[in-house]
Image (tube, rainbow, N blue to C red; front, side, top):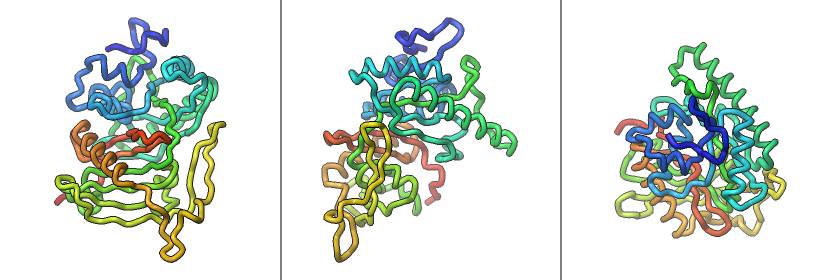
Length: 304
């Protein structure tokens, strides 16, 4: 395997951190994604597969200790050209994501983290949470993949933070009906955290995956919007009243035709990349660039 040489942490007996880009470039055999997932966890392995497919993924790395996270952050700063970049710190534990079972949302995500010390502290907190969840899974008899013997710890994903003006989730199959001929998109203004936390009613669009025809379209009812500040804090404020229809109560559209086309195309490509029906998280930044933040199997997909 090729891991980040510039981190200065690699030894012959093991490894400590790897950028997503270099994990992809290393020639790892990723036919099923399982080999990589055993090393860097399901979430990071999924992102490596997306990178391999040419999808836009925020730059980042995987760390197993606070110390290597601190070193990795310094490298990420050089790679990004930003002295103190804001990052998102998330678990990539094999316990959390998987095709047969998903414990998504049980482990914390820390957004807008800035500075090497703050990143190291966030990684330490998430490793502790991963250890707790792993112990609970073991006690309950749930199967889990073993930790990589080289690390003896749990993988944590650190990525550049996307300052989103619009964000959402999409599904390459209908998560309720199980229909495989459509792509479902849900979107909000600002960061996607209010959507994933269930605090707002998102815009909802269903598109026929082969013809591109819009089958269903419903505006959201969003009253709050989450943004990331310069200090890295997540701010939740009321949506501009001018963005809310006084008669229907609907919020202004998030998904322009161009945004919808980009999300639909990325969702279909994500499914192809991971090999199964995909649950995708994404965001648009202030330049209009779409970023794919995560892709994982839809674990509750009904049979058709």
